[in-house]
Image (tube, rainbow, N blue to C red; front, side, top):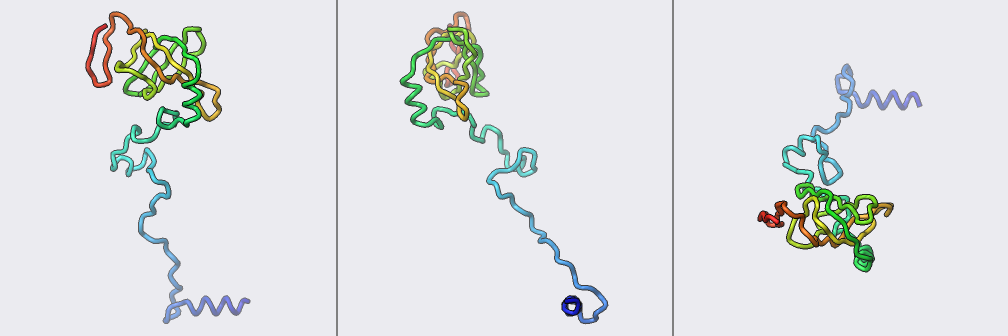
Length: 163
């Protein structure tokens, strides 16, 4: 075995037999990531002008909710509450239930009607569990029943109306 190793090393040497063979080098081409998007801190992220708004939301919206979850929510009871706060730019907010339990999350895709909800608006809604554990609930089929008096309301198209 020692003789085989000696022969292999000496046959790989160059013809003048004074310089050892060159070690293997890694390719100089850049390695592309195996995932379809770039990390937020990478230079490619900045160059391609990707924004967090382009990424899909992990919350179940009207479009990503399963048919069975939508059917169960539609068949459920109607609850009343008041808008605690809603951020149009973030696309979500919270409702205070009429019975005084924990605040309910509401997503922008689940609001019916032409007005953006503001603090104090009375609403009706149905509830749907939030996956994966289904321990919390979110409001779906949210309808503004009474606009908060003496406040400016905005339509989804951007028109401002005083109530």
